[in-house]
Length: 396
View 1 (cartoon, helix red, strand yellow):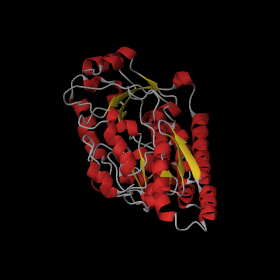
View 2 (cartoon, rainbow, N blue to C red):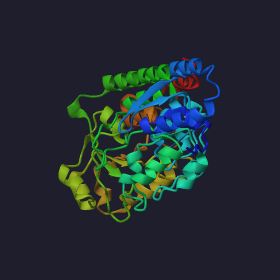
View 3 (cartoon, one colour):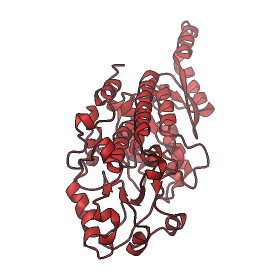
View 4 (cartoon, rainbow, N blue to C red):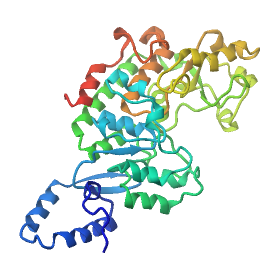
């Protein structure tokens, strides 16, 4: 049996099922057969130090040591890893969260041009091999089930898993047609990742901050019948052309978590959503109190910052200059807002829950200041930034 890289850290790191475990055992038997004197003691020590981490659809993996490096597809898995103190292990991604959203927590994350080397449409095996991570924080089914890369199939995913690193992840952004198994909530996924990185205390501390913020916001919301309905539109919408992509606010997945947590209702009907696109006339029939551009905070301006001027130029001004759009209540009241960046883990979600609360209830939570974001005046902050920073740094 030929054992390529048989003594590398990654191959000793994890066993992804019986096939991998058997191969590893076979490789090790040829190199350790001469050291029979301490084999029993060594085996006992390794078994005592090993641990298990489980997540669907991958199942359970037995690890001999904690992964040190990783790559992600979507930024929510990087956010979760950062929150668990694993910033230094991040290598690259396909879709990353803009770095400015991590600044309130003292994290230095490069601009997207330096953090997105994985192709967003066609997978490049060589990048996986070159990065050589200990683990790939991604749902493996995402790679061959989306159909974005027609040349890639399940055998290619298996090759990466066997020759580069094991997968560990779940498609938690939103449910897709092929996702017929459990879709974890943000904190369910974070708990699984904490198992992988052996960071239970950090997980529990972050969950406590999240629960406190959620309880604080919920306790200050007006009665349900006094809450606004919002028109949530995708950032691919084009006000200049009068084309809008309506969205629901109450569906599973981390991208809409801030809206679910604040019990925000959609101004759109099921027919609007199912139509795919709507025009100015339909939007005026709905006449929402608030218009929110989903992903708006991260899809305007430079890649490493948010530009309220660019957002206004792309979305607000066209509404104001259109003969129909200018008649919308949300436009006349100045209630067209950049929405949450959909890809979010626990860190960015804390910020964006605060943002949504301030956008919709400025009299209660303080007005959202787009020009200063992500900086927020201390008296308007709904959670303790330093406490979260301490958790990231391990000061529990």
